[in-house]
Image 1 (cartoon, rainbow, N blue to C red):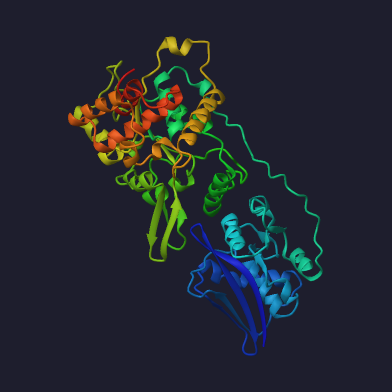
Image 2: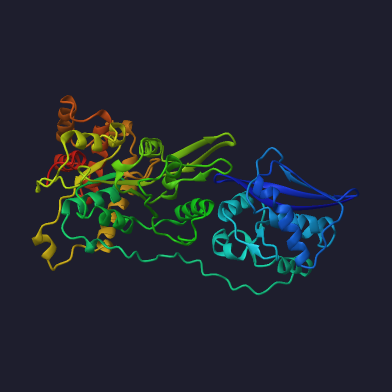
Length: 506
């Protein structure tokens, strides 16, 4: 009896578990048995591994082969187990030294010709492997940039199974040029200087970026709602290395690194179509629980255009992540929690035809149609939106102005400065953004000035705002105070915050 072993990682959400792959070759009728709760893609690995070994001039054992994936209670899915299974089989045949495969993590899907294809979830897998004490990992060549973000490990990128076997036998491999892991600060093609007029909407976007406040833009088509939303990520602060790794890990699991660089340090922008389902919005799946749009927008902006056109329940499914900054998805195979700390931006027309505004009389919708249309934005969801801004259509004078508005770089500098003020204020707290201040702290340590509180209490007594709305206004007032250089929100700051929440003022 011969036995071979290799190591790999099984992912369940963002959590990884080190899996020991054991291959036993025994006398008996030729057979292949795979143990350890494999899914359909993993069960098919037998034929991929066999063809890859044969096409690399290696032998396939014509005996009884048993492959065990431990721990056996953990469900395994995906094709990333192909490479560790092949290595374990070769170790069992004593083709490669057993000690060379016992302490290295292997990740990769095998093509029939032996080519090692890229897989999803390489970054979170390597983080889990490092926490388990593994120092060396073999990954597909196409995943090398993502893998080398784990600087504490020795990463061996490989393109072909033949090259890997040569390295395992002799220690020789092709010279790999070290990658420059400098942050990829790609310039956004969208700049706020392109937006004509809309001073109030621009102010709301800046306040939103300063404090992490959710935003609703209401106005007719062509007024600039989408333009403002697309430019909002450009004024958000650059992600730190820890935040960038967290975002990259989520996009790696979802397979989204084809559109986003693993080294990107800019805030992500996710804009699902209004026909997206609840599963697409929050995540899910039957065999593998994948992150949804709200998790892909983690540390960035989730923009939903034509929000009232979304199917029933889709927008309300965002209520939990808006409060907890995470989303928990429960399925029969288990429960997974993904981070979902995003900035929600909704855009909506004022009526079904979109022509209703304070300036025009071209709207053909009845009052009942307007109420039914806007009623799709439920009260509980709207209560969680901090800023609600009316975006009016542009006049001929505004469109004919030659001077451009402030650039995104200028606004971003102000946002970073205001956030640094908040960071110093919350130095000993568990939160860092004004939108995260707990209600208890707002009522005690972080109250606005007395005149501002009297104003808010008066609005509360007249039932113009709810208790949650009062706290939302107070948090927004802190952001405006940081922008204005005030040590505590004044009455004027609070009134501006209130008008932005109620969609009033000019």
